[in-house]
Image 1: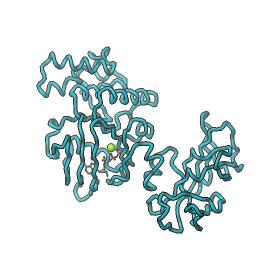
Image 2: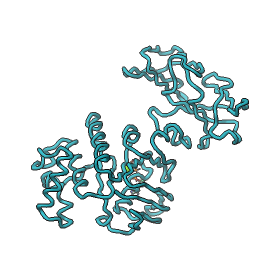
Image 3: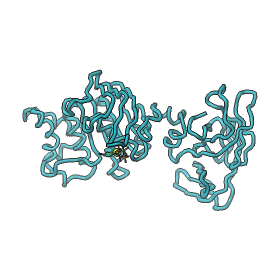
Image 4: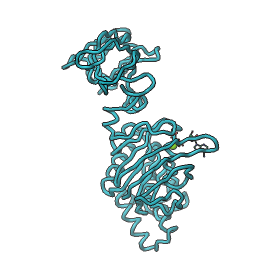
Amino acid sequence: MAQLKLQNIRKSFGTTEVIRNVNLAFDSGEFIVFVGPSGCGKSTLLRMIAGLEQVTEGAILIDDEDVTRADPSRRGIAMVFQSYALYPHMTVEENMGFGLEMAGVAKPERRKLVRQAAEVLKLEPYLARKPKALSGGQRQRVAIGRAIVRNPKIFLFDEPLSNLDAELRVRMRLEIAKLHTDLGATMVYVTHDQVEAMTLATRIVVLNGGIVEQVGAPIELYENPDNLFVAGFIGSPRMNFLSARVIGRDGDGRALLTVPQLGLEGLAINPRDRDRELPKDVLLGIRPEHFRADAFEGSTAVSLRCEVFERLGNVSYLYSDIDRAEGIVAELRSQQSVRIGERASLWLKPADCFLFDPTGPRL
Ligand SMILES: Nc1ncnc2c1ncn2[C@@H]1O[C@H](COP(=O)(O)OP(=O)(O)OP(=O)(O)O)[C@@H](O)[C@H]1O
Ligand SMILES: [Mg+2]
């Protein structure tokens, strides 16, 4: 268990700056998840923490000790990669014990630690096998086992489950959650998977183009995004953004909007900060799951022309205006289906909607 601090971290490859002044502080035992689009710098940040990549500027502190220039082996960190990186000519037991052997741990002790980790990961039946005789999930468990035996202060995971099929991913996700509970270790985890991020993280860090857009508990980011980017990134399918115009305020300080795409006039939305001036042109954010097929308390009726209707059994997705930049998707839980070309009457609650400045900030 360890605290981790990243202070004013910058990283350039040649003249290209890929990490631009990142400041983060994590408590001991946290499960931190990095998310963000491809190329935003997640792996680079992780590799700098591990010491596999040099920091151009700034400092990395583990338990308040500056390890910015420390050798990777001296940081008390273990990293698990997407491409398991197992040695093909070694058995599972040898693979798991290799790091310990390099660190000069004697054979009997190595054997004990490897057996303990194998028990946690249910790998005991496979200890004598070579990696090629294992399934993807078993190989990934060996890679995790190799990290566990070193008893690191911090675990780093770079998309560890992305090579696994859907069912195995769910199983491994639960195993990683359990591992975190059992070991209580600090973990930093990179993923593209919304469900992994939302379920595993104590806090999520949303990265974009080498900067931190927002840090917060998963539900906090979902319910209270700071800007368009985070609002669009957290949640699946992504939030709908519709052009709207502010036509005034009501007595309670709510913004009154016209939303031409929904045919709405005078929709009253609570801005985040009531005292702030609002621009004339804004974006209205509506999560797909906030549309409903039936009226409910405080809801307003809207009508959407159905252009594509996808039934998945438990939910259905209705797509409207798909040819426009601002297409709309509504997630419906009812069993009712809507025919292509028909208009559906749906309901949504203004209090569930968000307001954004078109340049990004939440209003
Ligand atoms: N060794 C390198 N030399 C030059 N540029 C690099 C190097 N490594 C990474 N980059 C660049 O740095 C940026 C960040 O890369 P990084 O691998 O950290 O992204 P990522 O967020 O992990 O993306 P992905 O989700 O695709 O894994 C990218 O633009 C990438 O092209
Ligand atoms: Mg990466």
